[in-house]
Length: 96
Length: 536
Image (cartoon, rainbow over all chains, first blue to last red; front, top):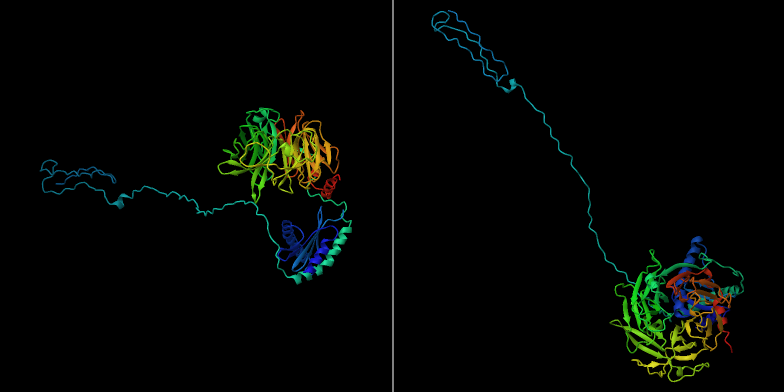
């Protein structure tokens, strides 16, 4: 338990990070530092997008696989680290 | 003796005549020429034509007959299956998904260990990266100028010389409604007025013909659409009544009214606002403020009656002494409220603009009873918690920022707009926009640093605090003869639209340029910096 907490705290306290959340394979948020409604929205949408990105990469080259997903928007950057069972989503406000 | 046969007439074949008659020479006695009896004689030939059909020949006539052609035609019939179906939109259910507390902790820990290094590396790279400096993407077509999309008016109201006193956009952003009345009459008037609504998404939109018109017996001074029902609109009248109409019912649009009871306002209603009911977030109440100093909360009950549920009264003596006010209270003088704005961050906190020119920070949760002798069925409370420094004249409009919890704007008859922070009494900045009155000020719903103000000189000024804090970025001239613009509202669904109503009875819908509708990258931070300039 403390291992998980410590890791998440380390990530959350990084420069510019607005929020961190862990989502399971069905798109249900497990741990989050943001409020409920925002978390649910991010989890659902990013889960779909990650699945789509993964299938895109696999379709182009079946030997390849998705390792990391980054979305840059006007206001901040969303980073998704995918895995078989979980997704780690980090939202960062870059420096400029 | 030889007899001589006299030749008889011969008959011809084919005649239907009588057969020849043989003349019989009558035997006569002996004498000269007459044969004697019992003597042979030959007679003529007698012939009888045959009656047999074969001899007579075949007599025939030709006749023919023909059956007429048969007319044919193809036709088909099909029994249809009918299925009834209904569609109903429901109010959105608030999301309340809780993250599950039971999960496989060792696997989660293993996963986090695996990805932590990667994520930290990417975060660091991102923090130092200059890859996207100055990189901008244009998703929509850039609109460079502010243009007038529609000029709407209702000719019977304009013929009576009525002004547009208030404008409201509905919850879907497609209908704009305006209220007609007069803002310069000082006494009671029995002027009939109108509430008109135009649906801008309809293809057959006619600017001089509203899609819904409601006749009201008294001048309507303020209007507010329901936050979720697209056709319900509340209005406050000159007589102090508050009415709620349903614009989809054209034959009898009035839904609820307060009636003229002891509870209703005794002065014209300055503003009405819809508030969510505490506990039932999909039901709404109407809050009305008027210059008699009362702030009343109404609930619609059956039979079309609006009932008072909570009430507040502003009394001069009970105002908090945060600033020195010039007026010294004598007795229980009421403080007339002319504008109200609710905070988007705290639903029970609201700002009142007063006739005395000082904004008041108030709360719906205030408990102190008001020292007033006004009759009321519900005990009236004193809502004021903080008094801000006054303007040079009555305030006509206040607006709370949708992006920062502490900032709000107020505009009044002195032509100044004050930007206040709720943490201190004197304003953060004060901008002189016009030499004449300012009637309305509104924050933009998309850009944290932009607001619009309507002035008595007939123009709408758009301010961008990021570009310049001294002069307006865009000045839109609404009326040609400098008659005042009384109200303006941004459309929160279609954020490029701004509607403004003026003294000539026309509503103009302006399309703003892209710079006013798209947020820049650092605006929220700039707003925070602005708010943080609180004098210590």
